[in-house]
Length: 407
Image 1 (cartoon, rainbow, N blue to C red):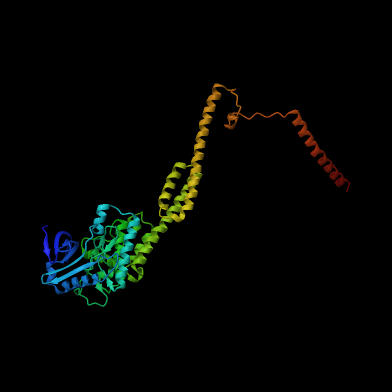
Image 2 (image 1 turned 90 degrees about the horizontal axis):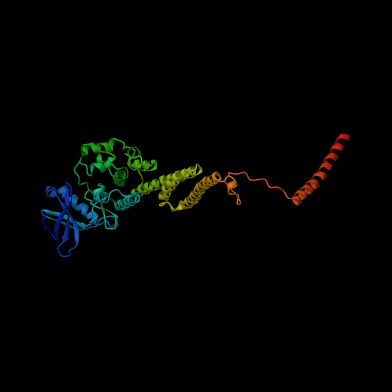
């Protein structure tokens, strides 16, 4: 698109568009700094309630100072022009980041979720609800950190309601049941939406999918979400339980805060990994006992991979490493033994009476060890020793027998 001047900002390409507003990359005309400018859609400029909600969202967001919330820098409200300027993050939103990078590692997902949870809990502590938590409202900065944005649907505690009676705000795929029913909300509504994001990232799909927004919203209200482990067998039971609790229809059954939810989620993954490590180690021991050394090595490699995130269990891994190394040496000795035996058999096949000065054939079980003849002095010594011990013992026995008979 051609650059367009809007107030003090030169608009460049479009970054995102919704029914309510459009976001552009822009440059401040005097400072030359890059910003993101969000412009209220022309259809809503003359809508007093929509215009006021846009302004209120910008004013509220500008007062939130948090490391994981995008800062609002400027607000313009005059005539046909209603827009706000905020930090520009070239990394784009979470969806764009995933498209560029592919699948995220579990640790990265947990870290991003925890950052968003921290931002939400902070906003809640200031009496602010986001009401539209979703991947496109989670931006990624140059350090790979999450930054929550778009408080356009923000709700301030005790502020007058600016949405029309009976209307629903939020995005259907991520909306909480109480939000879909236009009920009174608190921070647990944002927690539900964050749990939907977590479900999508870990399981690989949304909990509810339908033909339109209305049908999806109805599912959030009436239908239990599919168990994550049923959809994706790689999801451990502990993690499924954690996600399903945060997706409870009743807010009272969810976690007390967003941070508590993400902490429980991280703990669930850690617990499942520790179980997997123990199972892998048990399998290693069993395979070593059975002499299945190659399979044991494969299991040991899996245990080592899992233990990379659990240094506290390193001692057990060291023990298995030593056992595995000893097993490998034993296997090598066994192979060498069989090789030596075959070669010794070849020698005896050619020379049956080949001398065995070092008892190699005997050690390999190919010849019986000849009985050693005692020398005359040794024979005399052992005979004298036997008589010296045996005669007194026999005399004692005869004496005891005589006493018994004559008693």
